[in-house]
Length: 333
Image 1 (cartoon, rainbow, N blue to C red):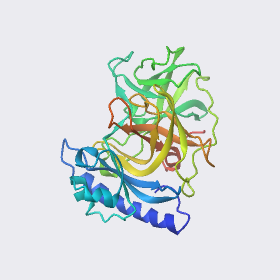
Image 2: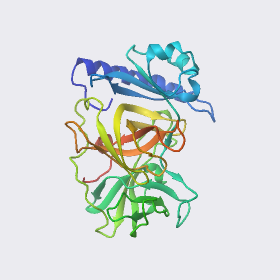
Image 3: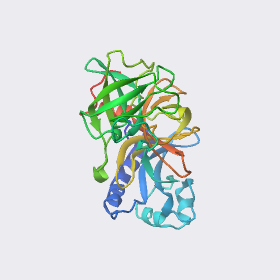
Image 4: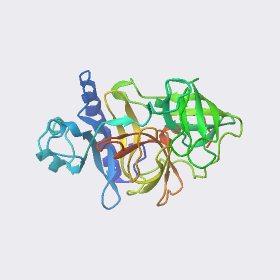
């Protein structure tokens, strides 16, 4: 877990979750070419009393037999024999463990043939938290949008009517009205866990924009603090470029999660009420309730598609974890 345990209960949970990373990575290393893992990720979740006491595993719905999408207690899931249950039997799971059965986690940016692309390919994502980099206006978004530092993007500026979209080489309007203008940007810091193997990595990019007045200020209280668990299930808002503002609830914290191609580190699991999907990658996620109201949780990097055309689970890259890395983004919020 990426926050500091504060009492014997969270110390125990911290040890249990960290102990699950080794069997997860070993299992990822055994995945055959063109196959997907049985287990997508591991982390923790709050109980009904709001305390973070449960180890959490997110598993492949295509390999769970009679267990359909949803959350199960480990003993309940274990009785429904399946390839996933057989694999987890070897992991020595604590009885308090919860199992989330979901579809494959996929990035929330893609090339869309209906996009208005200025120069191919037309990757589509969303502007996240605005900031400054070296004193110049900038913003954070998902790293999987681009292929590395130095890349150029174009922003469909919406003039505050919505969250703009970003494209690799070019971009279409977001479906929320035509852009008022186009703003150029350059990627100055970039990370994408694609191809990093079972160890995983982070997913973010910092984009500096021109002209100098090219970004708006977002009012916030900074990232979620790293000291202690964040409290029980809490409300958030996801500011999607395509879906608009969607309210949601944090239902888990995954130390690691992904598929055979890309494994994210330190992501929040969020259940949302809106139709978030491809193109909403990079969307700003803010805390709406509790003592951390007004804090920045992070930005959307992907989701699972059990129901077609929308994410039933969303995954949010934790901002604090990115900033605290030795080679983390050099930005001012």
